[in-house]
Amino acid sequence: MEQNLALWLLPIVGLLVGVAIGYLIARSTSPNRTQRQVDDLQERFDTYQSEVITHFNTTASLLRKLTNSYQDMQDHLSEGANKLALDEQTRQRLLAALHRDEQNPRERLNSPVFTEAPKDYAPKGDDAPGTLHENFGLKSRL
Image 1 (cartoon, rainbow, N blue to C red):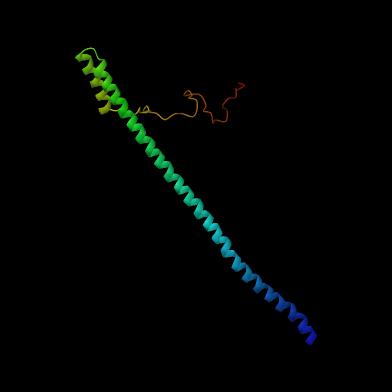
Image 2 (cartoon, rainbow, N blue to C red):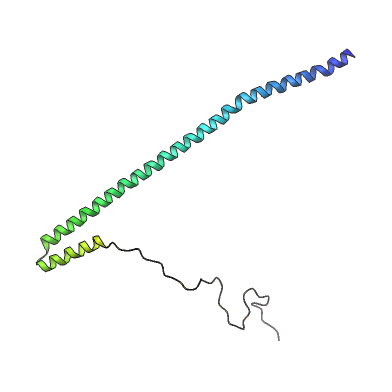
């Protein structure tokens, strides 16, 4: 009887000790892996944020350059109108045209306004069957 008890008790105790050791090992390694994943995601997010900031800073710099170039072009054209115009009337017209463009920038083109929604089917006559009719496209033999 004692042998029988030891025969069952030893594997059960070994199983419990193995489960406990496995649990402790799994618990000690799992947070490290999860923490590494969180750190990796945080690093990717920080990299993305810095790329977005760099992109918008570059865009702002290029826009500033474009604005300055536009202003330089306007100044050059005004200077040319003052120097190259043959008479005062021509000079005034050129300068007025330049300043008119500065004050009234061109508006965006608007898309046309439709009064009727577009159709996704071919129009039919009043007495013709519609495309979803069971006899559509079939010729009658009468």
